[in-house]
View 1: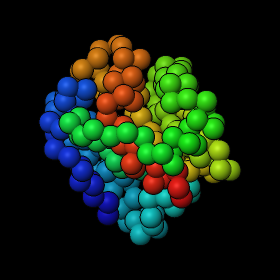
View 2: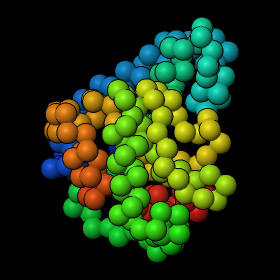
View 3: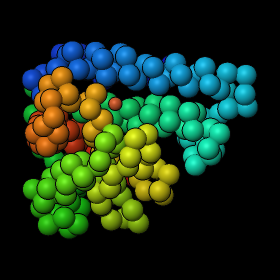
Length: 198
Ligand code: FE
């Protein structure tokens, strides 16, 4: 039985870049619903005792387990996503260890933002934009709907939820503005640096 993880900040902590109302719905309703649906779907099956990662691997690309995959992967993606954000009043520079890798692989932080933004904007419909590490090299990728980066043999470093439920109340259709605001004000670069060191 899975339970909804706790948030590492309070509901107002991300304002004005992500409102308490958005977080209340996004975390309290959407994320909670993925957890509840997953529990219902695996109840009484062999998956009830498995880790989230194993459930995702076993249900991926299985037509008869699509609902399980979608809910399990959404729980996993959101679990990481909340750690990728920091309270808006926390000043944070990109740690030198991570900045060195970013400059090596993208030339500059600004270029990385452009690539990240392009991935977020070209993700048609719902999905996720990721900064990942593959074979020691940083790269940007995107996944559709519930699909998750870890299935592709990469280490997730940062992820942004670009489903409409993530930004519509605060930014309406302006997904690009949402991406820039989060990138420049809310990304938790300390968390990213830890992941990049894995
Ligand atoms: Fe979401």
